[in-house]
Image 1: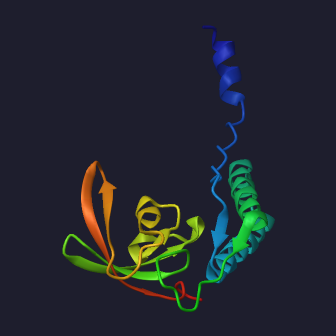
Image 2: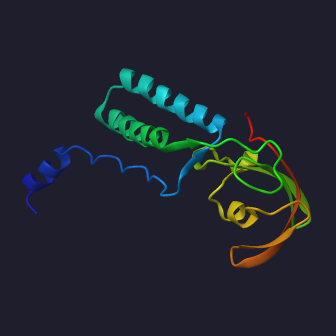
Length: 160
Protein backbone atom coordinates (compact mmCIF):
# COMPACT_ATOMS: atom_id res chain seq x y z
CA UNK A 1 0.00 0.00 0.00
CA UNK A 2 1.40 3.37 -0.90
CA UNK A 3 2.07 5.92 1.81
CA UNK A 4 -0.16 8.47 0.02
CA UNK A 5 -3.15 6.17 0.37
CA UNK A 6 -2.56 5.72 4.11
CA UNK A 7 -2.25 9.49 4.57
CA UNK A 8 -5.57 10.02 2.79
CA UNK A 9 -7.31 7.55 5.11
CA UNK A 10 -5.89 9.25 8.20
CA UNK A 11 -7.26 12.61 7.04
CA UNK A 12 -10.84 11.37 6.74
CA UNK A 13 -13.28 12.47 9.41
CA UNK A 14 -14.38 9.83 11.91
CA UNK A 15 -17.53 7.93 11.00
CA UNK A 16 -20.75 9.29 12.51
CA UNK A 17 -21.84 7.69 15.79
CA UNK A 18 -24.20 4.76 15.43
CA UNK A 19 -27.85 5.64 15.95
CA UNK A 20 -29.41 4.62 19.23
CA UNK A 21 -31.88 1.80 18.60
CA UNK A 22 -35.52 2.71 19.15
CA UNK A 23 -37.75 -0.02 20.54
CA UNK A 24 -40.56 -1.27 18.33
CA UNK A 25 -42.83 -1.64 21.39
CA UNK A 26 -45.39 1.08 22.09
CA UNK A 27 -43.71 3.87 24.06
CA UNK A 28 -45.79 3.74 27.23
CA UNK A 29 -44.59 6.19 29.87
CA UNK A 30 -45.69 7.17 33.34
CA UNK A 31 -46.23 10.88 34.03
CA UNK A 32 -42.80 10.82 35.70
CA UNK A 33 -41.30 9.15 32.61
CA UNK A 34 -42.78 11.87 30.39
CA UNK A 35 -41.17 14.56 32.56
CA UNK A 36 -37.82 12.75 32.38
CA UNK A 37 -37.99 12.59 28.57
CA UNK A 38 -38.88 16.29 28.33
CA UNK A 39 -36.02 17.18 30.68
CA UNK A 40 -33.58 15.09 28.63
CA UNK A 41 -34.59 16.83 25.39
CA UNK A 42 -34.13 20.27 27.02
CA UNK A 43 -30.77 19.24 28.51
CA UNK A 44 -29.45 18.00 25.16
CA UNK A 45 -30.64 21.16 23.38
CA UNK A 46 -28.72 23.27 25.94
CA UNK A 47 -25.61 21.13 25.56
CA UNK A 48 -25.81 21.26 21.78
CA UNK A 49 -26.07 25.05 21.81
CA UNK A 50 -22.77 25.29 23.68
CA UNK A 51 -20.97 22.35 22.09
CA UNK A 52 -17.89 22.53 19.96
CA UNK A 53 -16.00 19.85 18.12
CA UNK A 54 -17.42 17.72 15.34
CA UNK A 55 -17.48 14.48 17.30
CA UNK A 56 -19.17 15.97 20.38
CA UNK A 57 -21.79 17.71 18.24
CA UNK A 58 -22.46 14.51 16.27
CA UNK A 59 -23.02 12.52 19.49
CA UNK A 60 -25.31 15.20 20.94
CA UNK A 61 -27.33 15.39 17.70
CA UNK A 62 -27.68 11.60 17.63
CA UNK A 63 -28.86 11.53 21.26
CA UNK A 64 -31.25 14.41 20.63
CA UNK A 65 -32.77 12.57 17.63
CA UNK A 66 -33.39 9.56 19.89
CA UNK A 67 -35.05 11.56 22.68
CA UNK A 68 -37.12 13.68 20.27
CA UNK A 69 -38.40 10.46 18.68
CA UNK A 70 -39.20 9.03 22.12
CA UNK A 71 -40.98 12.27 23.05
CA UNK A 72 -43.03 12.22 19.84
CA UNK A 73 -44.08 8.60 20.34
CA UNK A 74 -44.73 8.60 24.08
CA UNK A 75 -48.13 7.54 25.36
CA UNK A 76 -48.62 8.80 28.89
CA UNK A 77 -50.40 6.04 30.75
CA UNK A 78 -51.88 6.60 34.18
CA UNK A 79 -52.02 3.87 36.78
CA UNK A 80 -55.31 2.41 37.93
CA UNK A 81 -55.85 3.95 41.41
CA UNK A 82 -56.96 0.55 42.77
CA UNK A 83 -55.23 -2.13 40.71
CA UNK A 84 -56.37 -5.73 41.18
CA UNK A 85 -53.38 -7.15 39.39
CA UNK A 86 -49.97 -6.41 37.94
CA UNK A 87 -49.86 -3.99 35.01
CA UNK A 88 -48.13 -0.92 33.67
CA UNK A 89 -47.34 1.65 36.36
CA UNK A 90 -48.23 -0.72 39.18
CA UNK A 91 -45.95 -1.23 42.16
CA UNK A 92 -45.77 -4.93 43.00
CA UNK A 93 -44.20 -6.89 45.83
CA UNK A 94 -42.95 -10.27 44.68
CA UNK A 95 -41.35 -13.19 46.42
CA UNK A 96 -38.66 -14.85 44.37
CA UNK A 97 -36.16 -17.36 45.68
CA UNK A 98 -37.30 -16.71 49.24
CA UNK A 99 -36.63 -12.97 48.93
CA UNK A 100 -39.39 -10.35 48.81
CA UNK A 101 -38.75 -7.27 46.71
CA UNK A 102 -40.74 -4.34 45.38
CA UNK A 103 -40.70 -3.44 41.70
CA UNK A 104 -42.62 -0.95 39.60
CA UNK A 105 -43.43 -1.54 35.93
CA UNK A 106 -42.50 1.60 33.99
CA UNK A 107 -41.62 2.75 30.48
CA UNK A 108 -38.47 1.47 28.79
CA UNK A 109 -36.55 4.74 29.13
CA UNK A 110 -37.53 5.12 32.77
CA UNK A 111 -36.33 1.65 33.78
CA UNK A 112 -33.68 1.45 36.48
CA UNK A 113 -33.55 -2.11 37.84
CA UNK A 114 -31.24 -1.13 40.72
CA UNK A 115 -33.98 1.28 41.90
CA UNK A 116 -36.73 -1.33 41.45
CA UNK A 117 -38.03 0.20 38.19
CA UNK A 118 -38.33 -2.40 35.44
CA UNK A 119 -39.48 -1.87 31.88
CA UNK A 120 -42.96 -3.17 31.17
CA UNK A 121 -41.40 -5.03 28.22
CA UNK A 122 -38.87 -6.91 30.40
CA UNK A 123 -39.35 -10.68 30.64
CA UNK A 124 -40.28 -10.59 34.34
CA UNK A 125 -42.80 -7.79 33.78
CA UNK A 126 -44.38 -9.71 30.88
CA UNK A 127 -44.59 -12.86 33.00
CA UNK A 128 -46.24 -10.97 35.87
CA UNK A 129 -48.73 -9.04 33.70
CA UNK A 130 -52.25 -9.61 34.99
CA UNK A 131 -51.19 -11.68 38.01
CA UNK A 132 -53.03 -10.92 41.25
CA UNK A 133 -51.88 -11.05 44.88
CA UNK A 134 -51.40 -14.62 46.04
CA UNK A 135 -50.86 -15.90 42.52
CA UNK A 136 -47.69 -17.81 41.66
CA UNK A 137 -46.26 -17.75 38.18
CA UNK A 138 -43.50 -19.85 36.65
CA UNK A 139 -40.78 -17.55 35.40
CA UNK A 140 -37.93 -18.74 33.22
CA UNK A 141 -34.68 -16.82 33.59
CA UNK A 142 -31.35 -17.89 32.10
CA UNK A 143 -32.89 -21.22 31.10
CA UNK A 144 -33.99 -21.92 34.67
CA UNK A 145 -37.60 -22.02 35.83
CA UNK A 146 -38.44 -20.47 39.15
CA UNK A 147 -41.68 -19.65 40.91
CA UNK A 148 -42.48 -15.99 41.55
CA UNK A 149 -45.31 -15.13 43.90
CA UNK A 150 -47.19 -11.84 43.76
CA UNK A 151 -47.46 -10.69 47.36
CA UNK A 152 -49.20 -7.33 46.85
CA UNK A 153 -49.98 -4.67 44.25
CA UNK A 154 -50.36 -0.94 44.73
CA UNK A 155 -51.12 2.07 42.53
CA UNK A 156 -48.62 4.52 41.27
CA UNK A 157 -45.21 4.47 39.74
CA UNK A 158 -42.24 6.03 41.45
CA UNK A 159 -42.34 9.80 41.48
CA UNK A 160 -45.91 10.24 40.21
